[in-house]
Length: 340
Image (spheres, rainbow, N blue to C red):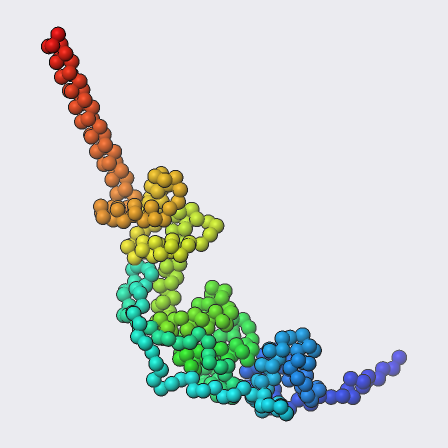
């Protein structure tokens, strides 16, 4: 049997200019942007609603994709410019800031005190989304381009245009250095917090708290990890297996960390608490621990010695009372005999 090439599908061909699939443009766009581009190359014209129905995506997301290609100069609109208006300058020469109180001391003990940091007031959300031209300009910086590549690898995903805009806004208007931003992303990835909104919020929070370099971020992460490890140790010592600590409990545990209470002493305080009131109680254990601290009790051995001494004191006091009662009783008997 002889075969021939079926030419049906080749009768209509969509040409794709090489410039549209350059490394730079592909690097800045995501899956939806590519799908929208292919639809436009195939049909020549379409609107956001029609494409949204065809691709089964939200019209707003499709409109963003259309705006992206409009910003690249690929699409044009007969009604209004597809590209969003240029954003106002987002990096004023002297941003208005109101100094606030210095940041509180670290939550954990055993670390050198840090210098007070001046809090900033960076907005959580950008005034407007970056335009395609702005993203292309910012992403051309070598340190930013390297950051984006490394960030994709850390998070295990290919960034959409919106993802890229978020990270570029953080480095541009918010002023987060690319190496510090990578430190934040690495920290979030290790905690399986890979959502870009979460990463953005954390980076802004740290910048507002005065953490402005990769070195400061790494130091802060070590402190947080030490606190987390201490909290886990406390949960184990107190037999907490099925829940995290409450905010009030974490505050108490932070005080224990600052005071330098070690795990064996914490276990002893928990045991004493259960003996006294029959249940777990962080406030009660807190009172015990700080009362021991005032007495110079630092180890379980000190606790046992204090307990033995207390028992001995109670025994001495009880013996003295019994002797006094017997003496009074004997005097009463003598008085009765004499009277007789």
